[in-house]
Amino acid sequence: MFYDRQIDPVKGRLVHADLKRLVFGQKIEVTVAIHLIGEPFGVREEDGVLEQVLREVDIKVSPRDIPESIDVDVTNLKVHDVLHVSDIKVAQNIEIVSPPETVVAVVSVVREEELPVPAVEEEAPAEPEVVTKGKKEDEG
Image (cartoon, rainbow, N blue to C red; front, side, top):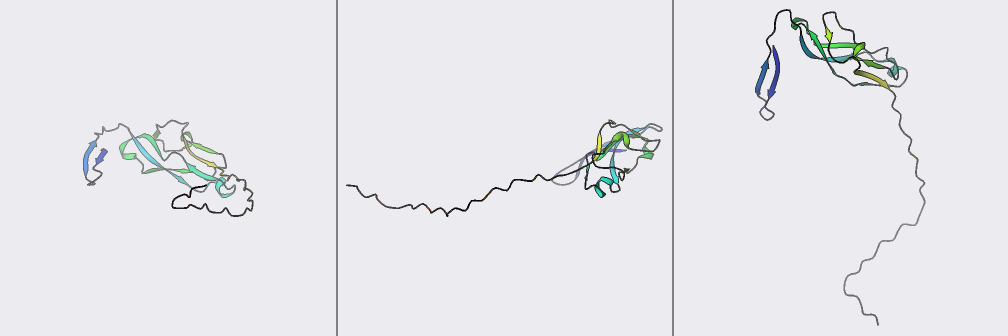
C-alpha cells in the first residue's frame, strides 16, 4: 500500500515513496477527511457561524474498508453547540483513534464591537511652515 511520498518542490517529480506491506485480516491506521453535511439550526435560525476546527480524523480499519471521507450531519447544532470526535457515528468495522474530546466543529456567534465615533472639532486649517533659503541677515 502506498503510505507516504516526497515530491521535489521545484520540478514536481516524485523523489521518494514509502510503501507499507499489508497483512490479511490486520487493521491499519489511516487519516481520513471529515465532511460536514447540512446547514446547522444555529446558522439558519440564530445567525450563528459554523467553524470546522478539525478537518481529518485518524481511524483504524481493514484496508478494503477505508472510506474516502467520513460524513457528519450538523443540521441539529444550535448556537454554542460543540461537536466532538466522540459524537461522530461510523460503521462497526471502523474504530476512531483520535482523542474523543477533540473538537470537530462549533456554531458560534460573531458580534462586531461598536467603536466610539470621535468628535470632530472644526478648526481653522493649519498654515504651512515657511522655510527660507539663503543667508540670514545680520541683526544690528
